[in-house]
Image 1 (cartoon, rainbow, N blue to C red):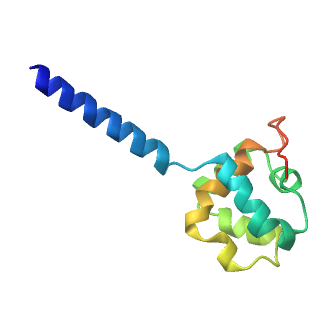
Image 2 (cartoon, rainbow, N blue to C red):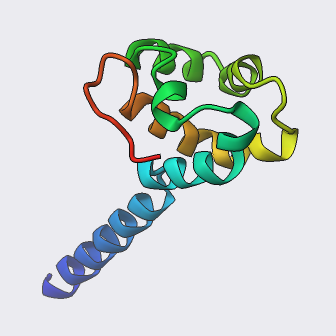
Image 3 (cartoon, rainbow, N blue to C red):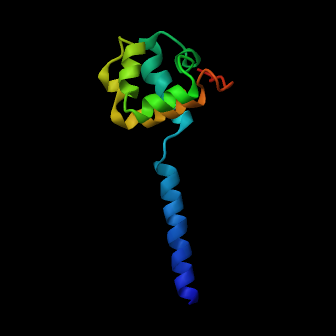
Length: 107
């Protein structure tokens, strides 16, 4: 019985750690924005995230239109800057600093 509990507890810890590292990150989204989108967009992260409210960013993301919205707001951005692997991080960044959040990014 004790051995089963240890195995279950170990599996829960490993699963919990892998789920945390696999999730998107606001700080990573901010870093990606600064590196890949700030110059082509010609605006700060606060200005870009402030284009929509948090709810609007969530709706855009859930509809699968975040890449299209980035292209609409920043027509000169290249496709390499908005790869699928970056979208969740951009979303977390934009939502965190949306116009109704009261938060201001440092980029």
